[in-house]
Image 1 (cartoon, rainbow, N blue to C red):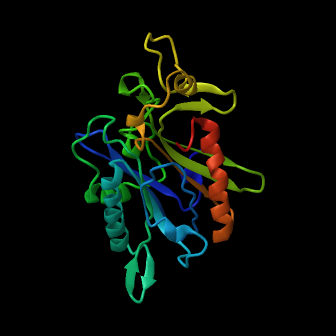
Image 2: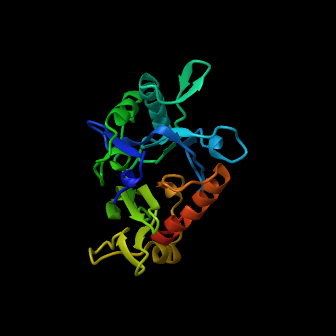
Image 3: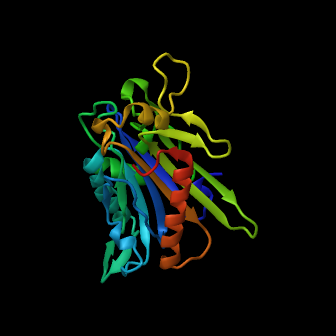
Length: 262
């Protein structure tokens, strides 16, 4: 199961033709109550403050995840345009205003990109949205890498992926995430590294935490790593409750990324 097995959720990608970057749209045509929890040292976001329980906006119409660092936030402009053209948004006295929060990953130096996700790419990601979508190095995951503690030479490709489950009573919970982490991706079932920094001799994983303990933290890695996730459910919650669930969902990142929230 994927996040699109949650009723009302669609996903679409747009991947740059020549650069290792792209964007991914999680579309909610009928609107959805949403919350947010932001961790890490250098987040790049747009309209996420609206999701906090003290603000009056009740529903959003999608979430844009993009590469390109701060440049990638403009993809939400394209998403707004597409949604407005398709009458998706709230009616502000006869004007359709889509609410599209956005967040970005820093992939500028992973492949030395010289161009970034555009407004048109945000538009195209919406146009491509549906129940079936690709995973891996596509959309926002196109330029993602993990295990960057020793530089690109010993890092591995990251990417975008999704999973979902159904609980008793028909409640479904799904997630989509992009891993562009400084450290390692961990299988929480057994604690084993499944992707991350590789040993220079090719003998396996170097283990990011062990590498930090041995040699310290390279300052050139500051502010260049991001893990983004969107969680969706068909269960009914208030805005206050969904913000608490967003906080709880960060535990999943902490269990599967080491170190987390750098």
